[in-house]
Every structure is written in structure tokens, then in C-alpha cells.
Image (tube, rainbow, N blue to C red; front, side, top):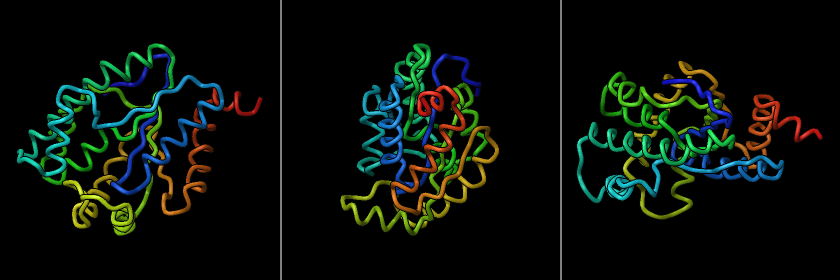
Length: 211
């Protein structure tokens, strides 16, 4: 894994399913856009890569696949994402916000396969300049998932989320530029903390905000 040397900055959101990372990443996108920042919001797994439909099928449990092979599909999707979306944008000086990144693969994937293998699969990918983990307990995430309705996906079950939560707590502190934010409050209160972190981390945004 390597540091970002491009003109743009890379921000990743992480959290359990139901933690609110999609909502908060969208709010950050809107905030940066309002500051006149050239910004892109994207997500993983993608919906555009050649294998996106296969991944979606397996997540919905509409087919069977070995855990290691599923993680290799995630990595292939990620490589496509980086090569076709993230890296070209960073080269242009664009701020890129990704709703999930390889930390999801490490936390979710290590439920069933060795963490060192997952690190090896993802070793050639760029590190975010900032990773925001929305810290929400599994039981609260499950309640949120139930409230929004619809079918649960492969990992949206309490016993799995409990283990994923432990994995995140163990894995994320070993990486640089990771911030934990209490995601169990109102959407607005959570975003205020995110905004503070972003303004502190990136002086170019702080200058725009204060001008």
C-alpha cells in the first residue's frame, strides 16, 4: 500500500452496514461542493466495473461462491475503481470521497479468511489521506437496517456485524490517518464532527471555509 502523491486528496468512509456512511459521505460531498472544491463522490463495490453485477448477486445471496474468491472479486472491482475513477480524478487535483474502501474487505473478509491473505490481496492499493470510521454498535445498525426495510444482504446479520465491528476496532488503528467518530447521534451532530476533522486535516479547505 502506498501514500497518495497526487494533487487531489482521497477520503474514505467506513462503518458497519447501517452506520450511516452513505448519508455522511453525501453530506461531506455537498459541503465541499459548497466551498467551491472540485469533488467526486463514489462508492465500493462499484456498479460500473465488469464484475459489479457478479458481486451484487453474491451479496444478495443469489449464488454461491467461496469466501476467498469473493474477496478477490472485491479486489478486482477495487482495481478497476482506482484505475478508472479514483486515480484519474486525484491526478486532476479532485477531492475523492469513497463510501467504503479496502478496510471493508479487511474487516468483513477476515470473518472467513486469513487477514494476512487479505492484506496481500490489497497490498498494491493507495492509502486514503483520511479514513473516517463511523462508530455505531452492531445492535443499533441492525435496528436501522430493519427500519429502512428491504432484504438483508450477506453481511447484514447481527452475529456477523458483531464480529466485523471487532475486526474494524482491531485493524483500523494499525493504519495512518484514521479517525473514529461516534455515529450514534443525530445525522447533523455526526456531520459537525466530520466537518471539524476535515477542516483540521486539509488547510486548503479551511482557508476556503474561513474566507
